[in-house]
Length: 327
Image (cartoon, rainbow, N blue to C red; front, side):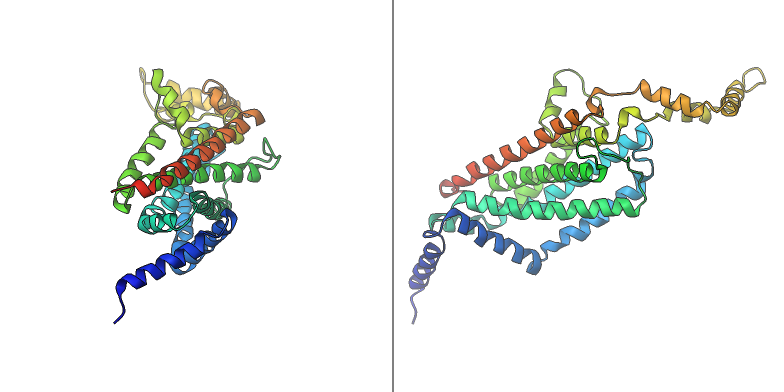
């Protein structure tokens, strides 16, 4: 009869051999290989077709006016931010907490937390890059009109890809940090909707923020992502069609038996002044946050990279105390 305690001791010895005498770089490679095997054999690859489905639905609804009008650009860019944040959150919200017990045992056997987090960051970067590539391909298939040139790299597609990647990756590492904080997947999935709502409410795109609350948006991934997407799309140089569409909607209003708005609309159309009115309307709706300069875009990228670094450091710090976790 085999003593079960002998089996536990043998397992502990194997763990010690696996980690204690290996450096951080070797441990990173070990876990990176494990993550890619999980991608293939545990159906983690499903994140990619899901990203394609979400991108397809969003571009079908809001894609036609993206980078064509101010309203369409703001709506479309906000939708792209939603895609990126959604993908990033779902990529990593459960990856750490679902194996918390295993991490605790292996940490006691010699696992370096920095190696573990580094492996996750490399893997998640690859996953985010694949999702961004899928999103851009879907946008091209949907015949979305893109500007001819970029602001930073002179290639709009490259500027767009970098921005989408940084948004997705920053949201991903934020979610990874949360996964390091909580002790089970149920808690992680409970916290995630609040994180998502916070990001969308304080993005500064659709909800007007006034007073001290405007400073809160500076701490969101969504704000800097939205600012960057609008900036590279020349938001301030586009026309705003809301005024013209509103006037056109009420063109048949009668005043003393006449239709003055209809007559004015016909007159403007005959004089080919509609486009000028749309552009003039856009001038009164410009935003300093969306100014189309390379400095503005790189500033947004810097904030997103800073978030990634901060979230990664916090993830390591939270997980370093896993041995003291009594939950």
